[in-house]
Structures are given as structure tokens and as C-alpha cells.
Amino acid sequence: MDISFTDRELDVMAVLWRKGSGTVAEVRDALDDSFAYTTVLTVLRTLEDKGFVTHLAEGKAHRYLPAVTPALAGRSALSRVLDKIFSGSPELLLTQLVSDRELSESDIRRLRKLLDERLAKSREEG
Image 1 (cartoon, helix red, strand yellow):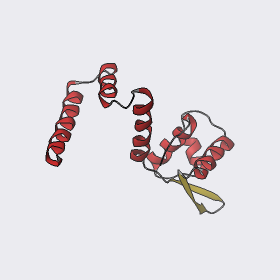
Image 2: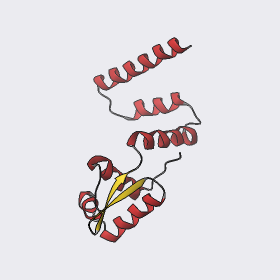
Image 3: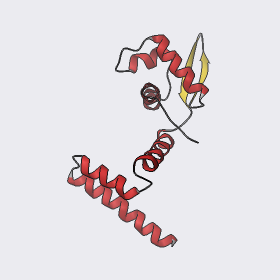
Image 4: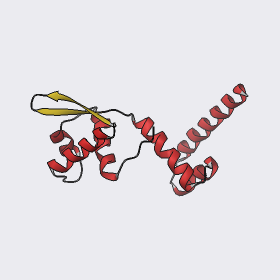
């Protein structure tokens, strides 16, 4: 499943992922920017049309719930970035990640641990 969000859609999804669900008013209140109620409603309906959000009737309002997890959305987005920007090279992506960020020593240790674990798993499978 290809999951792609506009910036506005991603802002709304971030609220739903963080809160678990929300009415249009709740999502609007949680957004940093001052989006109009109708704008948030339109974004939620678009996300629902795409299959990324569902809703439950709650009185006169609808309660919107995310239909995709942040992990699934992240994998899809990362796959597109990897293919389109880094020519499918995980090494180039990782190089960019660690070169452009202010990583603490503990961040680097955690990344090294993840890579070491992945290497060990690869050896076991191979």
C-alpha cells in the first residue's frame, strides 16, 4: 500500500496518531496553526476517501480514527525517499542521516546497536 500525505494531511494524521481519535473540532484545536473548521473537515474527508482514516458516528459529530499506523506510513515514505532521492542505496540514506544531524554519543551507540543486531540476524538467516 502506497501511503502518501500532503503536509496538511500529515499534520492531521499526527494529531490522530497522538490522540488515538478526534472530532473535527478536537483535531482543529490540537493543530498548531489556526486551520478553519471546514479545512480540517475537508482534510479528514480526503483522508477517509484515501482509506487512511475511518470514522464513527458520535451524536451529530463524527469521531475520526487513523486507519494506518505511523510505522506503516513511515515505511512507505522512507521507501519512496530511498528510491527517489538515494537511488535505492540505504548506505547513502544512512550517511545523510548521520552527517546532517547533531547526534549525541548515545544516539550513535543506539544506531550502532541496531546495525549490529541486524547484522547478527542477517548472519543467522544466511
